[in-house]
Amino acid sequence: MSTWLKRRPAISRRQFLQTGSLAAAAVAGGGLRSGEAWGAEQALAAPLTEFGYGDVSMASDRHESQLMNTHAVLMALSDDSLLKPFRQMSGMAAPGEDLGGWYAYDPNYDYRKGFDLGFAPGCTFGQWVSALARVYAITGEEATRQKVLRLNRLYAQTITAEFYDKNRFPAYTYDKLLLGLLDSHTYVKDPQALAILEQTTNTALPHLPGHAVEHDHPWRTDKDPADASWTWDESYTMPENLFLAYHRGAGQRYYDLGLQYLDDQTWFDPLSRNENVMNGRHAYSYVNSLSSAMMAYMVAGSEKHLRAAQNAFAMLEGQSFATGGWGPDETLRAPGSSAVYDSLTNTHHSFETPCGSYAHFKLTRYLLRVTRDARYGDSMERMMYNTVLGAMPLQENGENFYYSDYNFDGKRVYKEARWACCSGTLPQVAADYRINTYLRGPQAVYVNLYVPSTLRWNESGAALSLTQEGEYPFEDRVAFTVTSSQPTELTLHFRIPAWAQGAEIFVNGARQKGLAAPGQFAAMRREWKSGDRVELELPLKMRLEAIDAQHADTVALLRGPLVLIAVKEEQTAPLPKVTREQLLAAKRVSERRWQVNSAAGPVTMLPFTWMGSRPYTTYMKVS
Image 1 (cartoon, one colour):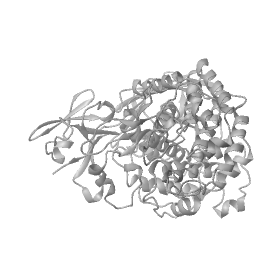
Image 2 (cartoon, helix red, strand yellow):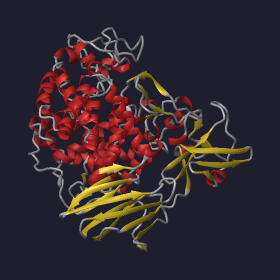
Image 3 (tube, helix red, strand yellow):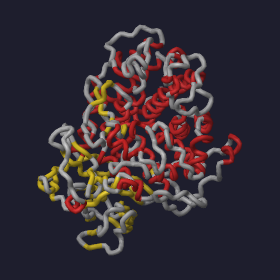
């Protein structure tokens, strides 16, 4: 798809409640730096577009093993087990094994007596269908396509009002079903997907609030007011996929519903004015809702919502860990507070990893597409290499990795409950590495992530490929080789991370002076021929990042995008005391291992993806 929108409707709903003018199609504007507000309206070019899932093949074992693991688990789940909670809640015969965990239906569920079993029946079904559809777009495997078609038809038989009436999360579940059907329509070409979506929407709407309702606010008067779980639904995240449904041809009603469910008064309006209203909000869902703001800009042209998303991202950076993660105990924190530092001792639930990274990747991809600002790619890269890429594998019995742990006594463990929400987002994350790595502009390719891979596409009648090789982020050199059926003029843009001081670019061995400015995309326009080679040198220097300004002596050690984490001999054993100078002098002793020399002996440092089951600490106190 060469442009984002073929058409754009009149803004309607009282001119989008006077949210602002349509975005101009002009020169790309820059993004915000941490703490800045979006000021005067900025003219932006048409957004960059995504390549197709099948346009990119990955050659990274870490990325591919995550995709293969999650896909194998989903393919092995029986149809009857997947449909069981839908059938049970709709009063139908429900053969097959109960999956248990969050996915199960328990009519007597009470979180006060036992939180996990039966918490969110069927909640991940739509995400799993979405992930299967995306994998089909990658592989073209017919068995995957047939499973998607079969599940959609079986699901269509279970669409009843009873399912939504009995569900604590009708908006959350509808939102996931909506995306699963959209991805079935888009990637599997299911001819019935949009009709099933209409049936789903018609059935769900009477059981949803008429507008976005904040987390923890009661709105279902027929439910037990003493049971807080009936207030945990997430209607404020729905506009992203509603707008996407309109864009993919589902009809005008989805555009109107997207406007209807925007959480403006208490969330997007103050964020657009650069008022930080994050404190106390559920972390994953409210960051996820920022993608709705981006879609309000991209589909409806609301600059207010673009400002809200830009400002919110800067606020989020201000309370993020060095890994890129955020939201200890699934809660956003007040600006300038010590809450993130305090979490290093008072919780092991530091970052809701697969769900949080999925939300973060979507938001940064939208922002990068709109602004072309390399800082969003930097953020995406940091999160990828330090959080979700190190998630423990999804298990066949539903055990799933949920929290990254940045406690001083950290450990990697599975969540107590099976089939939690992160079992739904991890398969989507694993498929989406492809669309995060490269983006497309007019006669241009933006290389966003440095992962061994090959991009294949057509440009001006030529068939091209761009193959990326190297051991980054463990080595500082990344090499690209162009293959083209004929000489083709286009611009290749390469992200130069903000930390990459002294970066250099070589084309066919010749150094390109003045191009590799840290924090920007280096643009090279030329007539590219088969065999042309681009090499990046991104110096991977050691640096320290404090947990916050008030605790400058509590730091994480980084090398390029990687956080190097201290391995502990025992879970609660104290680490030897180290100085800043000793940390910065860490020496590489093997391919994936560094060592810090302290007065009390050596300290082993590893990236999160290689931590295994060892106890560790992400932050160290230095003298």
